[in-house]
Length: 292
Image (cartoon, rainbow, N blue to C red; front, side):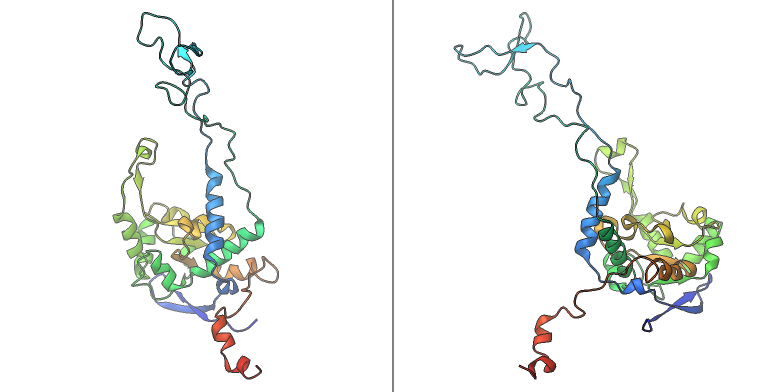
């Protein structure tokens, strides 16, 4: 394989302690269309079925008066002695009637997605995490981060205290993004407030590790921070909302593991159909024009 750019590895104090090569998967094509398509479908797979009651709007005895009485043929409540008698019932246009096409629990809630498409989307989202412009465009605050992708020494994985995790993130300039997420916390608009989804929060850094020796417990209480094992990379975390460019904090072991997960002995790394997609530039190049 051709030489790839070197990535700096930082110590827990924020000083450069070594280098490692950029994983080959980070050179995958950036396909926002595939990422968004797969994300849209994957995101449907954690929905719970809902439906209106089978009997809603149908719990009265009603029948049509038929024709010849100069009223609509909608079923009407029988009986007398109350304002309800004679009123229209059952129809979706009636007060107290059922809805049109009542929702059923057997709707098609989940979506099957091609495995190769899912892998392409994850590879593409991984490649986007190494592009500073895309990370900033997603809204992450990375002004004080020395390098993207941000790789920290393997000692990160054995961090056990949240206070220590805060110091590490601050040392490498990543804590600004955590504060951005914390400052964004607000009460959700709508009914979700009553359904255990009271607050909304922006996404902060995604900490990716190879072995959990305490880092999961150390970082999980920081606002906006998510954690993921490199063996279980999830598109919903790598590209929240279908938007590529999540700010990732890698442990050195996790970054180096990508070369075993993707490559000759692992998952295939997608390649672009054309190295240069600028057709006008190709056609007008000296090489093409010289043989025309």
